[in-house]
Length: 192
Image 1 (cartoon, one colour):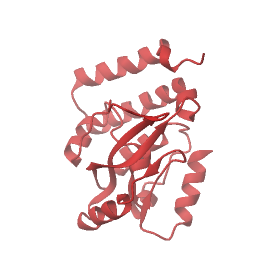
Image 2 (cartoon, one colour):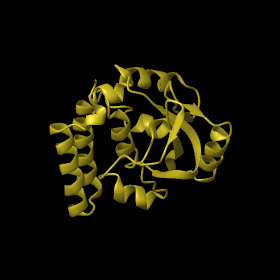
Image 3 (cartoon, helix red, strand yellow):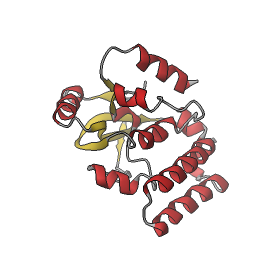
Image 4 (cartoon, one colour):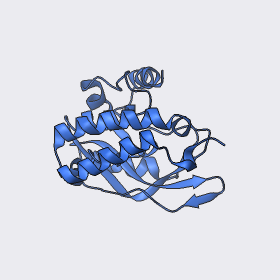
């Protein structure tokens, strides 16, 4: 599966800093330079993301993602939603290895689970600049397997809530929203 492949690729890497980019997405020219500089200036940061633009077909989509930037804010909100786009992330290999890499039990939420476990060994940050363009398509794995992805996301959110706590009312809202999405998927995500 994908988690095994990701683990193997990172294991083979000789670099301490690992940048991820999904196949359909593309990084803006300054992405690596800015993230490397940030990680070098902040040695406690083991996970660094950035803002991103969403491209659907030929059009950029208005941002629906709530951006948080600082470690303390990421920890407060990670049990409610995944604040990182996988394609924007850069991680430290030593931290990745220390926590055992991607969890092979997750097919769709392996990234979200990884972020939570990385927060056990270091800090996280999201840069204010848009450094990646993320393409969204109906054929994407995430789109076709929405229910399984939501179920796995719910499991990861529960782990994050147990680990980091948070506002119980907000947590309940996001849990119920996820459960509703499992029972009544959005019509925009159904195949025609």
